[in-house]
Length: 268
Image (cartoon, rainbow, N blue to C red; front, side, top):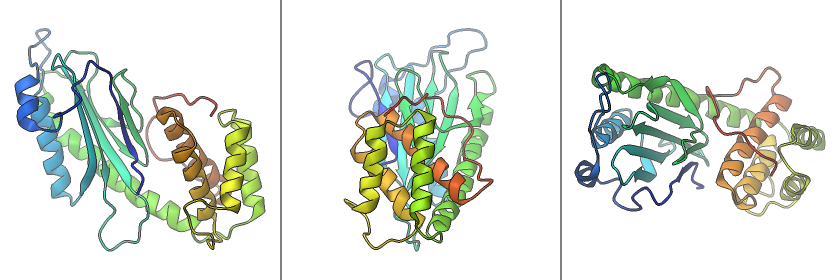
């Protein structure tokens, strides 16, 4: 199962131990930057977040954390195991960041693809989870995490519905052709990768050769973004784009999930 959670950090962040609560406590920096600025322990946020996920029955794996060496910035991402008893062959992801240096707020992400980067880049943002580090943050932190996880549950259900719908739509060259044209017209997917999608549909490298539904097309797109595009930011954005363009073709009126994507995709 491919990871849908990506964390990119530079040398200003610790490479190891950033998931260890004791290590975080020993290295985080909680000095206030002003009369209204209230820094919050990264270890406390991580503990609250993981406890809340557990209480909602979410099993996290492929966890990654990053703590800045000055102790003020923290990022976390993880994949979420599909629900027990389902035949899901995909997973979704969650994450949050909290910067105690006033450069950013507490904020959560969730969805099919989650990426956080030390350069302030963040995708699949849950806007209502946003909270500044001011006097009310300790009182509202639990509710902000709750808001983010409620969105995760909503998007999980919607994603399962979308994929189940793809699996009911018979494959056709007409659908594939419309998708390839749509991708080309966005200007965000290069001809090479468009042709790789076509090749993967005709001869899947990893997926079911006998799948005769629109899910075959989505799997081809995922293979290209996962195995053929080396830039993780481009891969994530192109994957979301391919999914949404396919859904628009097979389900008129489709509305993409999520609040915002902070990363502008480039031609891949």
